[in-house]
View: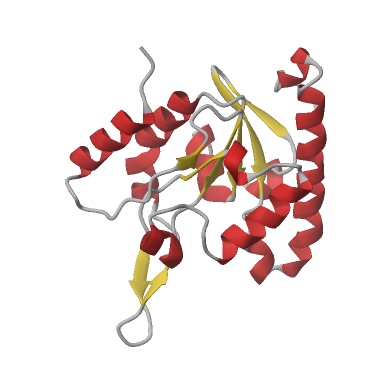
Length: 201
């Protein structure tokens, strides 16, 4: 019997013993496309939902380019809590998750993807790309193409939507990759063999 997301999150919370304020994935539990980001930020932690801050707005705009809506997708993060470091005054600032934090949540991420059973996993940034593939691949090497993952769903690597905030020159690359993803998804709806991850986009 396939594992349900509800059971998965209950087990995850029990196993971690309330150590973290978890932000679970959300969306269509039977989605053909699952998006995996890095980790929640302040807005995501406050609302308990992934991609609802500034990066979420950028993501929604990019999804529109591919003809996708949030409602049709499953959206989650590689790390399920907000990694922070001290900022000015009493404020906390976001930080990248450590390798140990990514490794701690990797088994839960694999089970989450298996529960949804998407036909493709779209990773947003280096952290989710490496967490999903179990490799040291970088987005700079892998973006814009389909990657085989053995028995697991293939991966389509994208830069993180927040990257264009800090590196505006990546906007054109990210938009081109989204157009490639849109074209691939359109063909996938017409040709069964397009889902062969060994093929080039």
